[in-house]
Image 1 (cartoon, helix red, strand yellow):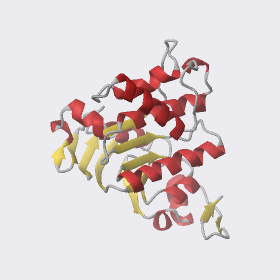
Image 2 (image 1 turned 180 degrees about the horizontal axis):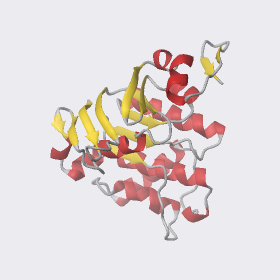
Image 3 (image 1 turned 120 degrees about the vertical axis):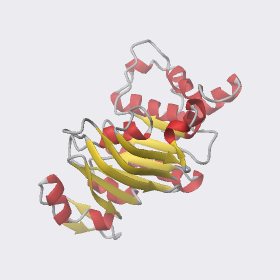
Length: 252
């Protein structure tokens, strides 16, 4: 379990995040939503120990995140950032192999996991392609494959995804989120995903946490949080709500 208690970040007179409390359970996908500048990416950077909180605590399995050895934590926690800049002429396989750095694997095992991870994100046979010549969406999926390799040896992983669908076409948006949900269901992962599309959040997330002005304004199920009234209050937009034939709620 990943717990966040009274978390704050930023100078006292201008907090970026204030009084954040979360309890994230294995086996579930959590959507982190909110307007631009609400603090979503900052919270993810705190959860992966990239930033140090100004106040409060983050604990993994009841152990403070700061007490975890970095190498051990890297086998449990993987992050897909919004953008990953690589200026060298790497092949795709070399980028994915970077995920093996905290693991004790042979080269043959690494090669197998590279192929397996690329297949999971729909990039079979891309091993020898030049990373820099790929489209933005393909590069994003290569980075996701890298994270999958990094977490390949654990069934208690934490997967943090910062806008993973931003560069993807419609079909691959759903494929990536289905993969995230499968990791939660089949391997007991905690998945936290920053999304701007509320319909994707409603379809794939078990729980929703909405940030607004650096504070947690809503938490609960998608049906509870993503009402027209709440959307108007947070995003200042009045949506129309429809129920599809399969029972899904759609917002426009």
